[in-house]
Length: 91
Image (cartoon, rainbow, N blue to C red; front, side, top):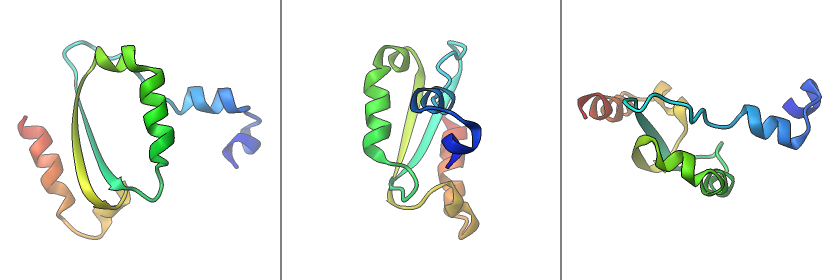
């Protein structure tokens, strides 16, 4: 739908929705994600990481995996999500 609305082809939408790997070397990146996210297509995500492996290896990424179904919107339903954010801030 977004591709059609903006007139993007697959490569254009893939490029503008990708991760900004141009980060300062001192930047800590916290990736908090749910294993069973109903919005993210995990295979597409993993393929993108593999295709850009060299760029991601140069980053300081700390992954916090949540073994549950959810997306960033799960913050609206309880305060448990804040535990992951507090953990990230303490590292």
